[in-house]
Image (tube, rainbow, N blue to C red):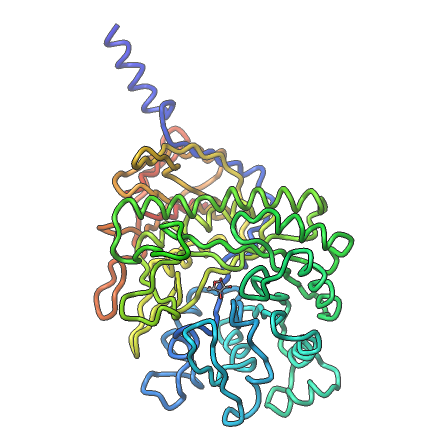
Length: 512
Ligand code: AHR
């Protein structure tokens, strides 16, 4: 009897029948393209993101091209940034674009009231931003000032930037050195109008949106309305109601969700470098919950807009910790560890899997602020673990999503449970790419992957992992977290077994 049991157990193990973690791909159902803009970014006039991070004095010792840091420029080109949002954030609703054009010596200085009360000299304005986008090959996404601006100011900005006609604004643009208009398709009408962007009620903002959107016009414009924060379903409901009959004026509704380890906006949010498993677990839980938010907001949107004319745009997301000790708290400067890499991998997997309804996402923010891709300190620069996740996941940009069923074991801590594994898959140019995360910091997980008729000859893997769960890349030191090659076992019985080490993000590619 005992021998029979051992035999059955051995058989079950070799055939995968008892596997705890299974992933079944459905390549025959692949039809939705993952919009590359899901891999988008956000750049606000905040802390050292623009000044020092992207842009320095042309005469600076830091190597630069017309003021753009060469090292940052190169790193961002390599990252394939598809779209970049600017100038905020909260800053956008205090920004008057005419302050940032023309000879620099004539541009007024203002106070950056939201972020540290520092002087903003407007030396980086519309031309500098749009030229930067051209240099890194990103599409610009401009955020219009609704909170303290006017419809006229918005219309003139659109005219200045995108028009080919003769008008006072196009004359001004030409006088300022730019003959041809820029190609700007994405226009956000306000930012967080429920908070820093005007403290409005959704009923009021829906009308304001209709007012602005009627005047913000151009070929192929994608106009984005301010949507909810995290689980504010009432905002979504009221916005969809308020915009009903006018869905031709709105192509996207935004969602903002930040991941805080402590659930507290007022007290400590937790450290970015010094944390234990409790804060690790909370961070993973508080990021995974975005899937529930997305699903519920989409249910509301679909009720009003069954034809899916309005897509969801997650134009602010990422981790938010306490500012690094000794830094200006208004600069939102934090480190970025392997924990952030897991957060990025989980979120991008979720967004990919909702590619049918999510057309863009913008992580906050691109350099030196919150969950940044790049950190700079004077002339030094580091690429963060999050940078490497975006780089590794680039294979999904404009690829076709492969639907999947994932069954994952749980990762338990203090009596709470979360799925250990997250995943998404896509196909492009005959190459199937599967990305997976293992959020368990203590254990390797083995995933049995049924690739359902995917025809391939080569299997290749890449991994982002670290020795310790608090590891990060520091200035002047060897990188602790980066992309390395990852051995994937050859398939057995048509199944691929992938062993994902503790706290890792993995890419497996099947090539013909
Ligand atoms: O990303 C930092 C800030 O977070 C943005 O300015 C604002 O939109 C959000 O509250």
